[in-house]
Structure formats: C-alpha cells, structure tokens
Image 1 (cartoon, rainbow, N blue to C red):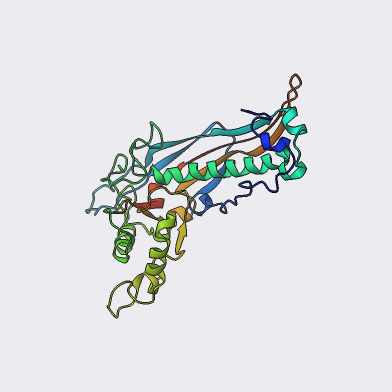
Image 2 (cartoon, one colour):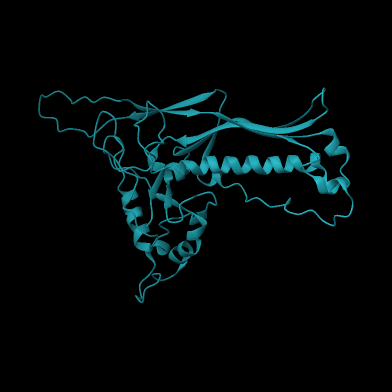
Length: 311
C-alpha cells in the first residue's frame, strides 16, 4: 500500500504542535527464554528421533545373550517461512511534509518496520505454545502426528505412550508440585527412567503475581499452615518464572525442563536474519522501504516442555 498526501493531510499544513502514537516501546526479546536457536541454510530442516536400547535380560547358563535393536523413530520437519513487510510513500507526500524530522517518513518507517517484524517473530514463537494442545498443529507428516502437549505420544516401535501434560488445574503450589513429580518420573522411548528435571516456569502476564507468591513465599502460600514452601526450599524450579507477553491463554502454564535447557526441546531455525532495504520506483518516484527475514519454530523432544491448560 502506498502512502499518499491523503494519508497525512495534516502534514501538508503548518500549525500542528505534536504528533503522537509513534514511539511505543517493545518488550525485550522473549522467545529466546524457551527456544534454542540453530542456523539454517536450507528451505527446510529435518530432525530425527532415536530409540536406543531397552532393559537387560537375565542370561541363563549356556543361553545366548539377548540382543536388542536401535533405530530411528519420527522425523520432524521445520519449514522456513519468509516474513516480509514494506511501505511506500509518494514523492509528493514526502516533499510536501511541513514538519521535517518530526514526521520524516523515511526516518520513522525503519523503526516501525523493526518493531512490526519483532512482534511477528515473537507471535510465531509463542504460537508453538499457544497451539500446543491442538492436534491440528504437529511437526509434519513423518512425525507422531500429535500436538506438542499430549498424553499419548507414541514411543516408536517399542514401549508404551508417553506424556508431557498434567490434568488441567489453576496455577497453584499443588499443581506445580504435581507437574514436577510427573517430570521427575519421565522415561525415554524404551521406558527407561531418565534424569529430566524441571527448570523454568513459563507463564502469561496474567499469572505473574500468583507465580511470584507460589515460588517466593518462605511458607506455604495462601494457607494457615506453618509449613515450608517445598518448591522454594528445594529450588524445584531453579530458574523461577518468566513472563511471555505473547501467550494467549490467561490460565495455561508451562514448565521447561532440563532437556529444553540443553537445547533439545523447542527449536528456532534462523534461516535469513532480518534485512532492511529501500527502493525508488523510476517511473512514479514512489519510495519503498521494506524488511524481510525467514525462520521456523517447532520442537524436537516434546519432553523439553510440559504443559497444563489451566482452569
């Protein structure tokens, strides 16, 4: 869409004291709190799960040793998508502007583009969590075909299903304790107990003060019991809580685990870093400024993030 003098009629006449609504501040980058960034040089990237060895068996005298198989399981595809935005302005709208740098379209538009591109990227990252309970959002046709948060993730050719979800409940100390207990009991694709630990609580802005009271009170929160706050005493969630302003469900909460902290959970592929450009149309002298970048978000190991849909 081209900006003409009709978009900025007031700019053609002197006498305006101030222009407003142009300097909103953005939040600091938040997707890096729960996403690990990897470089990408291709249109899409694929990662493949593994199923390793199971339990050993008792060997009777003279019997052969039991042999086991290792093999690949599911393939996750990350499709890099190009996000772009631009705006153009006619020569007349630019030259007839009466307010100089105060309303200089070519000065303000790059800042506005940067803010829009950042906001778009944050929403794309948060949508991995926001859509995490919806089976319409999976990691491709060769994946297990399930949503990020699911109680029935198959373990490949062996073993039973695995979960990274707990029963929907309001955020509370009990709900977090139950989630920590479930995480501590997580197993690998062959059903072997794994040292997966809770690391960080990720919440929407609406749950900030509830989370602060739960995690930081020296005694049990919102009770008359003279008992320690076990979550705080044991540092059960060592990184505390982090707010994401792009989470859309005001009740849902999530715990990133040691798998996610190690870079094997939720993943961001950086394909094209953000670039800005400017171009002039030689026939009508319209001036275009634009920005573009390409990236993908998704997950490798679903147990990198546990979810509760809230209540």
